[in-house]
Every structure is written in structure tokens, then in C-alpha cells.
Length: 122
Image (cartoon, rainbow, N blue to C red):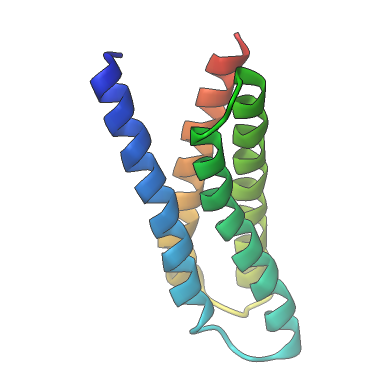
């Protein structure tokens, strides 16, 4: 991949992960205010915000090892986000159609970062 395309991809993906966080904050505000929902909601918000923050940190990594480490956190947090969305749906706190766009985005971010982590590992 030419350097310009790589730079453009990295910047676009940084913006994408930040948008993921913002979209989750907006979704968080719509959730019910029951005690159990609040506990899960916070986990959901923490994991999604960690995706954006750690991808940004990966972009500033000082070494390949640090980059791999930060990408690993992004992979873990995106997967955790998916877990909490499944819990919200299965506990009938929200419906799948309400969460589907966010869950799809989390899964796409997970795929991209997991593939990038594998590439860095080689």
C-alpha cells in the first residue's frame, strides 16, 4: 500500500473509531435508567470509548511492540462491546434493531484491527 493511501486509511479509521465513541454516547443517553441497565450501560460506554482512545494511541506508538499492544486492546474492547450489546438484547433491555448499527460497526472495527494485529505480528 503506498504511503499516502496508508496515511489516508489511518486518518479515516481514527475518525471512524472516534465516531463510534460519539455514536455510543448518543445511544447511551437513550437507554433506560434502571439499575441493571445503568451497570451494563457503563460497561458498554467504557468499552466503546476504549476502542477510540486506544486506536488513537496505536497511531502514536513508538515501537512495533507498542503498536501491537494498543491494537490488542482495541480488539479486546471491541469484542467486549459486542458482548455487552448481546447482554442488553438478551436481557430485553433494548431490541436488536436498536443496537444493530453499533454492533455491526464494532464487528467491522474488530475485523480490521485483528487483521492489522496479525500483519504486525509477522
